[in-house]
Length: 293
Image 1 (cartoon, rainbow, N blue to C red):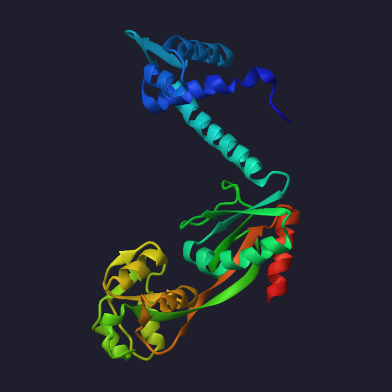
Image 2 (image 1 turned 45 degrees about the vertical axis):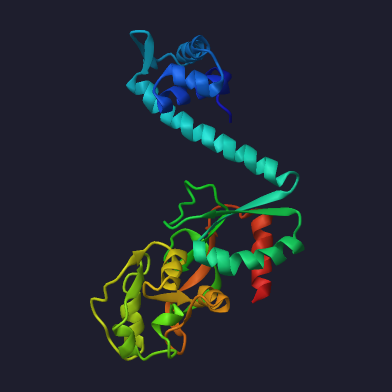
């Protein structure tokens, strides 16, 4: 049920409040909104009268938001952003249904997006919107229908569709291994690049390859793409998933620093809220992914 109209201020008055809070003065807000200073003041006064709480106070010839006004402005900013995103979503999708997916950067770029082209051709009635995140997704907060999860089935309250396991390979610029792939022991002598979200990945790799290593220090990155770029520039050896490594090998920027791939712990899943109706667009994507094997 929508709240009574008396609790629904006009968009223009909410924009005035948000702009004054963000820019600091009514004068700056008026310039951004293409209004006069007095028009902004009237919008704020009308909003204050409607809410019934003091939202601003006069300081000389200027206005300053009260604590209540600043707190309300923060909530209003979130509402305006949500409204703008909803409007953009409708504008971009037109008459088609939309599907909002949260993706991991490298996997989304190199594995999922190329496959979504075929899905789009099979389902022209659906527009897929992608949102990239590094931190875990929160379906109770994020406006997502589904997301990509890497790891184990340790996310509570979601359904899982397994997409792909992961293989990794050490990769570096050609000049670091001019004679071709090297041994595990020789790799230990090279600078190793690390990923924040995969602590201990190198230690695990060396252990699996019969050459335990400890305290393996080196440059730290928050994304595979940045780490691959640093490797291509000769900063060190990156432990890359196959979908990214193969793309870089084809470009010639990187070469294998070790002769073979190794299985990595963790699986890529499509996940979606268990207690929420997945909706027809998501159901179509799930069926399509399952058919791909």
